Structure formats: structure tokens, C-alpha cells
Amino acid sequence: MTKQPNEDHGATASLVATENRTVDAAGAQFIYRELGNAQDESLPLVGLTHLGANLDSWDPELIGPIAATRRVILIGYRGVGCFYRNTAR
Image 1 (cartoon, rainbow, N blue to C red):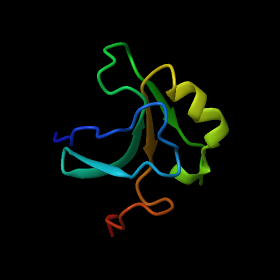
Image 2: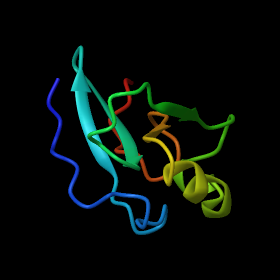
Image 3: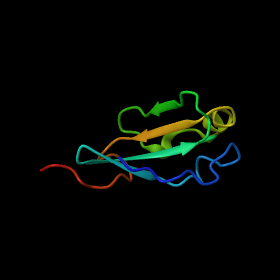
Image 4: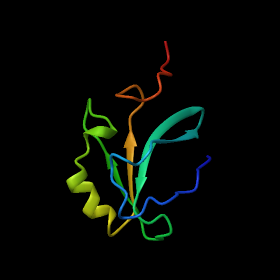
């Protein structure tokens, strides 16, 4: 699993301005957004969307204040929204 260092995604970073990142695991690629303090060693809040939603479905007014106090990782589902089209046939 590879991960890029989190550059300036502190409490001031907005959900909309945070870029999508990817991670490869077991031959599959997953997309996510990470906000808050990457150096925070407490457990992050991991957000999963509802069926048919994508990473842009999260409300910045909800995520922003949470990311101001802790690390937040939002996970995107494969094949939904702007996720890479790499589905099995």
C-alpha cells in the first residue's frame, strides 16, 4: 500500500479544495480524501457514503468542523461518481 504525504490539508483546507487520492490494495484501486491533521496519532474518523453517493456528496459544513479537531478520511466506492472506471466485465 502506498500513500502520498499529506500536504497542507489541515483544518483550513476545505472539502471541495482537497484533492482525491488513491491507494492500491490487493490489486484494486480505491479513492479517498484526507482532511485534518495528518500527524494526529488518534484514530481517524472514516466516512463511508450511502448507496449511489460519491465523495462530492459530503456536506462541507459538516466535515469542515470535524476536520478542525481530528483527522478525517472519506472513502469513495469503486465504480461510483468520478471514480476510475476499472470494473470487471
